Length: 242
Image (cartoon, rainbow, N blue to C red; front, side):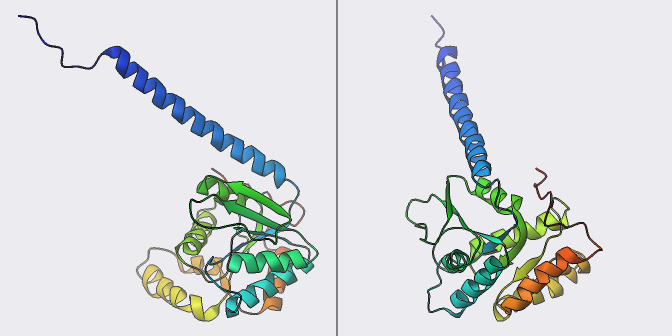
């Protein structure tokens, strides 16, 4: 009696593996293409500041007006402003930069049901991949301004902290806007993360909090004019070490 064949044919298995390989290859090409296209568009935007914040805030929100004012003053001081390109506080920062003398850059993410690009962008780039968008936020940032937000904003802020703490990028200025909003997080970091020795006390110096637009502008300039660091507006070499 002939023995039944229980294993799939080699030809079918090979075909499935080839199809999977082809799909992954196209994904890799898409990623490389997205990186090349973005870097070409952003090649001459430095010095720039990456500005994070909620997509859900409304124009009547106090943080909306504050974000717009901060971005405007930074733009007037010569900084191009990079945002996520969406609504809410991203729109506020884009608007402030757009009305200033420097450029407003929107790094938009393509989502099924959310985030239409705001109308205050001199340069608008669409991304399919979140992680490639994050690379661009870091690659060109001479400083970070982080306004109140949800999980997305926390993700961006924590990633910046990690990159600086682990020396994957230089210690550029990081400012949290909304002292009342962020104070609880700072207290938790101090009382839990630092106290239980999951990080060093000096790690909390990576960022500062401020609600004063002039103080934020002056703080960023002071960081670059100090002689005890190697930061420079001319050559900052902020390429992330992947």
